[in-house]
Image (cartoon, rainbow over all chains, first blue to last red; front, top):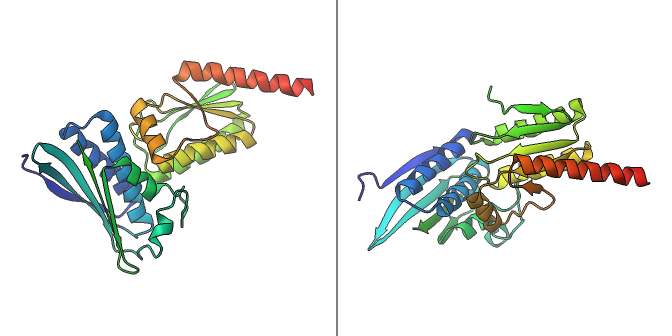
Length: 134
Length: 127
C-alpha cells in the first residue's frame, strides 16, 4: 500500500472545488481507475464539494484509499457544519433544489458511485460519504 | 483576471475551454458570450469542450443557459468535442442537456451551424 492512504482538502472557496476535483483526479489516476470511472468520481466529487460549500457554508473533503482483499477503492467524505438538510427525502428527489442548482447534485452523485451514505442533522451539518471501487 | 477568450469568425463566435473552470469563471464566460453575441450580431456560437475532462451540473447548466440566451439574441449554439467519458458521466448524472445541439468536432459543428442558419433563413423567406 502506498504511504499516503488518507488526507483532506478544505472546501472554503470556489477555487477549493477545483482543487478537490483535481485531487480526486490524481488519486483515481494513481489507483488506475478506468477513464470513465475517474470521470464519474471526479464529477461526483465536484457536485458534493459544491453542495458542502454553498449549502453547508464550507467544510472539507476527506479521502481514503481502501484496500479490501484484492479490491481497491476510493472513499470520499464531504463534511460541513452547515444547517443540515431538513427533508432528506425531498433533497434526494431528482430536480429538487433549494438553491440555484439544477437539483442534480445529491441524486446525480449517488448514481455515479458504488456506495453512497448521507448523514445530516438540522443545525448539525451534513456528511456525505461516497465510495467507488476499481 | 482570468478570462476565456472568445474568437470571432465572421458571423460565428468560437470559444475553446481549455482550463478547469471555477464557477465564477463559467458565469463570466456566460456574460461575455451574451455580450459578444449582441455586439457582433453573431448568428452562431461554437463551444469547444474537447479539453474538458469533466462537465458537472454547474457547467452543464451554464451551457444550457448560454444556448437559451443565444437563441433569444438570434444565435444558435453548438457544443462540440465532448469526450466520451464525459458524455457517459453526464447522462448518468441525469443531465441530457435537452435543447443543446452537439457535434463531434469543430469542423462538423461549423457545418451544422451553417445548415441551421441556412434553414432558418429559408423559413423566414417562405413566410
